[in-house]
Image (cartoon, rainbow, N blue to C red; front, side):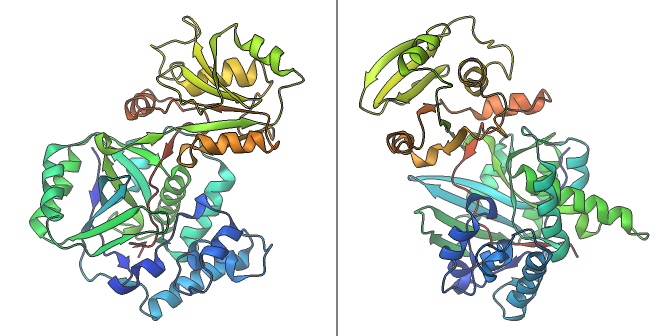
Length: 414
């Protein structure tokens, strides 16, 4: 059963939230962060991407960069740009994109639930990326950024959240990317206790986004427990920061591929090779979007094509085999283009669907890439089926949008 608890969040005062809040550390590079934080000393990038306070080109994994994160975190608190709540609370964090709003609960999840698999993952993590985030958690003694969880929706939680959001929001703003962010405090003790009780009846939580942050937060919590001779089990380090959204409110968007060459094939040879496993239809110069599962969109030589996987090329009863990312990886990228490892092959790049299919066209038309492949998005049901079966999705399968804004609330491990 999922164990969660309220916590004393560290947050910006209302009038500073838009200056402090930032995009997550892993969706932009150092130079982009430097540009976004320009002229804004209160930007959270000074804590989550502190290399921006050093000359361009400074290694973001240098010890002095992590030290700077801790120095800046302390300074933000001294200056009152981040202030700790006096009482433990839950929080509601809602996001609006394209007129649609999803409502999450900000909680502390239990380290043990991650270690024992009650918090389920669907992606592999890389040790170097885990280690980077572990250093960040250790040196700040805090989860500065939350992870993004899904849970099987519960009508009673929906009703509680609906009641909370009738009140005035603590924060309510539209970020530069056009997405709305809304944030409420849950201070009523009875409501807090009831939320904890309902979650205790939920068997599993699912990591939607933030596998490396989840691993790092849990591993540091476990490390602190082992290092503390007086460990009792109720210390803050036994918990880490998460925003939990009901599964029926979440939207996964497509995650597409662009490839540099056709593996020594001509355009005609490549299209002919596709016909072994796909029904190939030319669609002309207008952007073509995949219409359903097992239908793909291909852009090559200024034209769009529809590819429909033929019967027998996939297994709808296999949670991994049914995925379009598996079909395209096996039958196009590997079999025809010779791309065996999506994680390490330099001939392939990945484009989040938030950028639109026009971005695929642009990268091919510019000559940077030779061919683009657009996929029908994975469903939440597919993600949960895979996590429940103990399987791992192929790399670069899911793209959640909107991303959580960092800096609305932070969890200290002490």
